[in-house]
Length: 546
Ligand code: PRP
Image 1: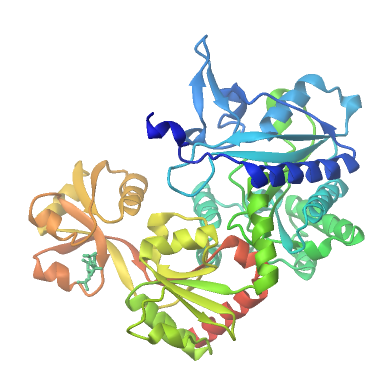
Image 2 (image 1 turned 180 degrees about the vertical axis):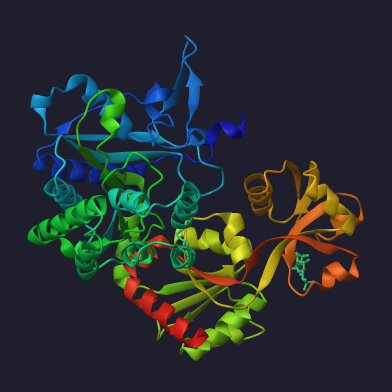
C-alpha cells in the first residue's frame, strides 16, 4: 500500500478519540447559548456558485477560494464563510414581516491558503446572523451572545476588540482623503503598522478636528473618554457624528448589559471583508495567535442579493476554540510569561543592551557555552529565544512569541499579520536597487530586466506597483552582489549598510527602495490580552530611546 494513502493533505486533519468528543461538546454548548437568545437553525450548501462569494460581495479573495466546475461548466466554490450564503438565503426565503430574525449555523468552511503556514484550510464555524435590526441595541445583543458563548465553553480570560467600518469610511469621505492616500492608509492598517499610521496622519493636510479623529486610528485602545471627545471633534461632520453617536449608544448598551469589561474599542481595526458597514469585532484569548471569533455589521450585503435589510453576524472557529481552552488551562496553572523572539546576531545583542536599561535582564542568555534555546527570567516572568530573522514574524504571528525584534526588511518581506509598534532606531540601512553603473539605463528605459534578491516580495512590490516595470525575479539566499558580476542578473535588490560590499565589487546604488531599521512587533492576541505589560514596555523603551 502506498504510504501516501494514510496521510492527509496540508491544511486538513483527522479528529479522533477525545479531541473530537471535546469539539462536539463545544458545538453543543455554543448551540445552547444561541438557542437561549431565540436563534433558529439554518443550513446552506457546502458549495455554491462563485458569484455568491465574488469580489463584488467583498468576501475572501478569489485566489483563496477552492473552485471547481459543475457538469454544466459553471464555476462553483467551497464556501469560505457563511455570511454571503445566509444573506442569499434570507433574500430568497424570508419576507420582511418575518424580521427581525436570528439565524444560527454550524458547518465546515474552506480557504485555500498557502501551504506550510500552520493554518487549517478546512475548519468548523459556528455562528449567528441577526437580520432586520440596525440598532446599537442589536449590536450589543450580539456582543453579549459572544461573551455568554465564551463563558459557556469555560473561558474566563478573553477580550473582544471593536472597530467601526462606518467610522473609518466617514473619516475617509469627510476628511476628503484621495484614493491614493486611502489605499496607503488601508495598507498600513491592514499591516497593523501603527508607526506608519502615526506618520501618515502627521502629514495629512486636514482640519484639526479631522486630524484628532484620524489619530484615533493609531490607538490600540479607544476609551469611553476618547469617544466623548470624538463627538465634539465630529460636530461639523454629519456622517462622522452619526457613527460616533452609534459608538456611544453601543457603549452605554454594553454597560447596561454588564459586559463592558470584556470589550475594548480599536478604531483602526479594518477587515478584509469589505461588506462590513458598521461595527466590526474580533475576540481574543490565550493559546491562539489569531482571533477565536470575528464578526460585524453588514447593512448593504443583502442588497447584493436583491433585498434591503440591516444585518450583523459573528462566527466562532471551533477548532481554534479547542486549542484556546487547552492553553487557557495551562496559563492558569503556570501564570503568563511574555516571550520574546530576537533576530539572531547583532540585532539581539543591541536589543538586550537596550532592555538592560529598562531593567529587563536575562543572565542565562549571555553564557557563551550554553546549548539552551529558551532563556527564562522567572522573577519577571519573561522568556527569550533567538531565531533566524525571517522566522521571527512567523513565531509572533502564531503567538509562539508575544514580541519579536526584527529588521523592517523582514517585516516587509514576510507580510505577516502582526502589530509593528516601535522603531528601535538601530540597524539603520537602506533597501536599494544596485548594479553596475551601466544598468542605470535599463532601469530608466523600463527594460524587462533580471533582478536577483533575497527579498522577492519587496522587489515585486517595488517594480510592479511603484515603478510599473516588468522584471524577472531570481531568488537567492546570500552574497547577492555576486549575481550581476557573474551575469546571473542585471541588477540586485538588496540591503546597503555602509556600502563597502558594493564598492569593493564595482557596483553602485541605482535606486533607493526604502529605509530600514530594527522594529518591535507584537502578536495581535498578546496586544489585547497582555495590554498593560506590553504598553508599559513600549512606553519605557520609547523613553530610553528618546
Ligand atoms: C548584507 C547585504 C549586503 C551587505 C551590505 O549581507 O545583503 O550584502 O550586508 O552591507 P554593507 O553595505 O555594509 O557592505 P550580509 O552580511 O547579511 O550577508 P549575505 O550577503 O549572506 O546576506
